[in-house]
Length: 300
Image (spheres, helix red, strand yellow):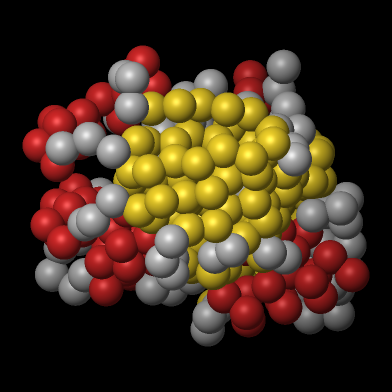
């Protein structure tokens, strides 16, 4: 750790509630691994998302590297805050899903992830924007809005099982929605379940909803799931974990730089597990806006 008279070079932002309290329990292990790597740092336990963003903003102004020990929610918001600052972000996965870390190649093990901060490479990735709110993984609405809300409200179901539980609960009350999409100026209508705009490939604890999305191509992969019976929809959910759902006739994938979503009833847009906007929403890409510390093998 740095002395009291010397400003540390790194800020470690920790969401103590992430992963059902997993981060708080593993914090000493993460700090020891950082110290072993010679990474001087100070720790801030975040009170909420806004507090985490503000701490990241101040750290960026001081030129500190920001390490986030949390799930995708705080990681996405801090990443958005650091966009276009040139300040690198390190990640120690601590959430239920850890989808951004999974896709970019950061190990789930706390000591291994912390070890990358001193010895890793950096990769510039795109950042998504939904009505001014930034995200790193997937922004989606429709059926996903209901499922995300249920998952976030769940108290008794923990771990990655919460996503399956939420999907089943949401499906019971679901009625098809009509979405109007404008992709780079071209308008189309979709009747069905979900519209997902992928900056990354995965969400929901390993569901590869946009399996061909790339973090650095400057594009959103827009996945539309059209109207099918509830039984067909639920039978197809396991295919999403392998990314094989995109071959089904009710699934359409398009790419664009800018997407506007409207619907025939209100929906919140969820991204990285949290609500970030309300429809109508315009989603854009900030190309190569964020520098992330990754394993050397993850840099092409």
